[in-house]
Length: 325
Image (cartoon, rainbow, N blue to C red; front, top):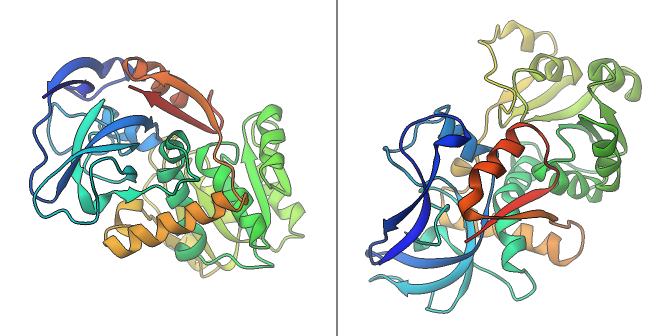
């Protein structure tokens, strides 16, 4: 069958996202065909488009997150049926399309209470929040955490979740407007890094003790400061680099406080089917209980994906953006 999709022929800026008609093969063994209702937009899509991450081949269809309805199933698929409402946040790439085939073991059924746009906006960001909070560093009552870009997509999910777990949540943001959003999302303290030195403010807030864990998806602009903010025996989780790659590290910087440093990624934390299902279930539970609210701030036509990328890179976004086929 034929469908429309966003195709990248060579690495580049947002202009590299081309709206084209493509062939979609019937689902192979172990695959399902999903017609998207909504598609998630994430910074990892920018990384692949720009060539920071290497795609499997060129040309390719970007995107790792979507929600929709199963239209066909391949041989050997037993957990899903035609008509099931499903969502995913996983490789292989290919979400920026009206219809796609995807391995069935990468897809989860949606509970009745979870709308498709919420799933498309929240699966990747929400499961990222889950593994950061519960597995990279298990946040418990009394912990102090620092989260950069607290008004963004992951921050809007992780910060209220962490607050529910009993943590003191410190967030950094780029404007007063985003600071208000961060506080509304559960941050006890919102630091506007364009006006304040976040390292000095964290020291002030914690009486010099530092934080138990830093969650940093900004990278180059914040990383060394993140290390400074961590308490002795603390953890620094660098899970993105929206401001650019971090320079090679002198590991003796970690030795000064016996710090743990990790560069985690969602694909590894959901590589096993049971881990994927458990992570999605944990996310759906906190959404259903009202602990976390996935906010779809903007819905943009799939054909205009370049606009979504430009706004994301310019840090004009808060919450989540979805693409609509």
